[in-house]
Image 1: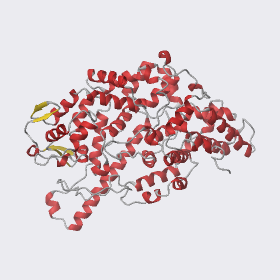
Image 2 (image 1 turned 90 degrees about the vertical axis):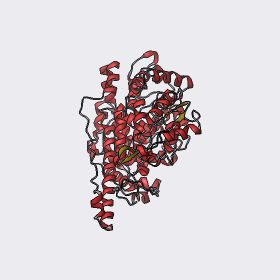
Image 3 (image 1 turned 45 degrees about the vertical axis):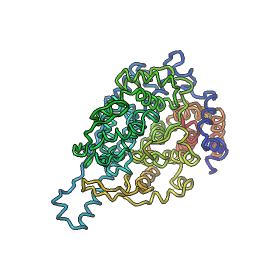
Image 4 (image 1 turned 30 degrees about the vertical axis):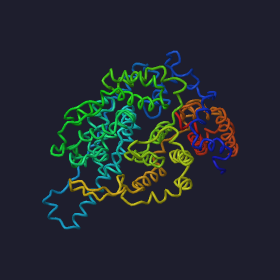
Length: 573
């Protein structure tokens, strides 16, 4: 059988360059629609509430709208849909019960031999890593199950905003508790979350505040608290950072629990941003929240995340005033945004490149097969977004930074694995270096190797993280994706037959409608129809009879779906 990509290479290769984003925007921006729900007028034009507007809202407020989701939303009406987004479904949310490691007491440790101490250390490290991997899978399951997609999207947003990495924290329990903190405050008050983050054990470890004492202030948390978490560059001085660090002295943790060490706290007078007093962490956060730059910073980040573009200054200012007036309530902010006609404008709809986690979750939902969360996590890791593993304190770069020649091709390979038409061998052909990463040591560790003693509450220097950390977990997830028993429920023939799509063009249109969030470009549609016709004719099947051939028909439709999900249009919502 000839290569699936034969004759279609130009469609894929032109988008594989780093300039994908503008190319895709141009390709889909002037495309004529071949899909019924995407033929509507621009979303919310004249305050219309149509299928296109609903699809856009569900894509941005969740993780990939399916045709069934859109039809259901059309039936409940606008107000009910918005209410449901913020309330979640009535289904009971599965709870992840954190298992706290059983550490030996000081007396037990003193009685241990060196070999026993080493064995106990290794057990604690393995158990901690295993639990974090299990939680990662649980979180990806929560994204895919659609019980409360907006909440989970905000948890992911806060994970990239208040960044911490398991590679540096090296405490899975602390990372899990931080994630649950984000879930608690996901749609609540940013002010409350900012107050909480200065007491978060994972953040205190990640930004070295556990080493911040009155005799030796450490400025890391103070600096990032201003630069990345509240104000942005240019709205504070170096002296403000030094004074803020003094306010944060003594804020530390033991065994993933916050501890305030009063003896290490600087009780003296400090001056931060013009305010003088015996400042502590709470007073420092209050000062930051009062700065005009703070609501502008948060509003700008939220708008950029949900609209997929750097917002105009006047739009940021408008939403910043609203955010402050509403006590930094995120739910109020998003309710206004989701009811804003500009959110549904042509420069927003279909113009956002999706990140790897969203890409994988959305494709699973649209294809109609939901693999275990660890499978989705492994695929997203391969594409550059590992949960609990952002690259640095600034988090992940978004937009066109998500797409390189390699990651674009790997996105196509991974959707092919999801459908069962490509293999791990195809992954390795694109990047042979992955073989080394998949075989790295560490029992699937996400948090890397460390010389820290998890039995000892005293801080020790952390080892440099291994670059391949977590490789075994990724390899296991990819192998499970390749085996894919959950694919047995996939029935693209039945989906097309139910829609009355039997000829080549109708099949292409139907699958494109189901699998893409944006319009299929005319050039891509012509190429896909030609491809399907050529494959059908090579099998000796007459036009309109492909769906009657169970084995051949389903196989060809999965190949076609793979092509559609490998297009530039598949990278956008």
